[in-house]
Length: 451
Image 1 (cartoon, rainbow, N blue to C red):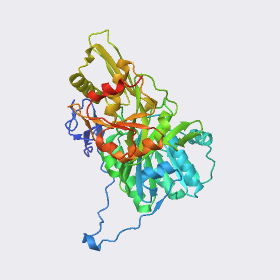
Image 2: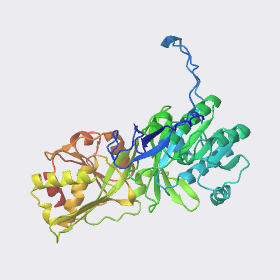
Image 3: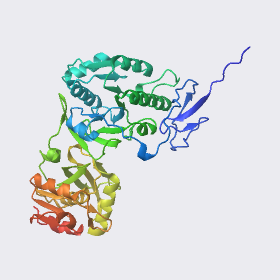
Image 4: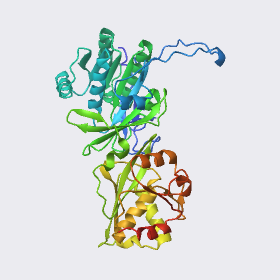
């Protein structure tokens, strides 16, 4: 009687991908608990071919001609560094409901208008559901193909038949290979499927845009290897309860990652914002506890309204609440104010928010946050034509900020006629509408001039 073939199993961490021989409560790789899942090893797992080019001297290597074409959406092209590159993989991540599928369909529409064949593969929705959303966005074209499938081998077969220039895969966590016995979404499936997609796409000079789920911490779900294998990593962010969305480039092998695309979500889909610098303050009416600052996202400066609310604390532990700002940075700023301005915040609850759902960790916001907090405490209204920019150190000094020329130029372009900032920033302004701020102790004196 023949012996049954023994099945080999291993335990993979679903957070970091670390492999273990047996189950245990804590992962050795990332230290997180209860993240190990059993997966059966298969002898049929795809292995990369052993053919490779011989090593060459760098001067003998010929540069390949980079074939790039535009998507038709200006904000997306700028983030990509000029457009899509044939033979590349793009990973698009974002929270549920932020508009990833909407962005893909609008990209498909723009590509089809340029006579490019596009295949939209959905592992989460049926073809009828995708068509319903496409019609709502005004997508009517014979160059767009819809396909609902989760098996990788069937997807490759469909691509061979249609021969598209670009194909979208929504999402990579729903795709699985029949050669692996684990379920789609596991570390082994995501890793193996992405590897095969990479080889398949580059061999045929196609463009693959993969959608990736994100964890509650905001990172793309699955092994970190996923982000290393692809050529471009984009993150689509924004609160679904607000009207704007922001497309950031996290990684780009074909261009820089210092561009940001800003969109407004409307009934007909995503609309690019033509003037992002003044977009978030168009309807602002400043009251006490509010002021303006200039932040930079990538190479794009835009104004943002900083709001603070300081109220009496009726409990033993004061509350610190932030929206769009860093809580640790707020605690640091309050400590500096207590030490340098002699204000005891133990008796106050402090809330800080960036209006419009903006999220930023720009150090230039430090000075504006202090002004907003003091404005709320003293009930002093800051004039709407004033902008505060500067990083605050632990000694209470106001320090230099990056991209000062971009910020100052945009402040003047928006028609704001007074800037409070460090001396080196204001050295780039020729007129008299400026005020040097060297330390936070000077802010209280400035507020006395405001009503």
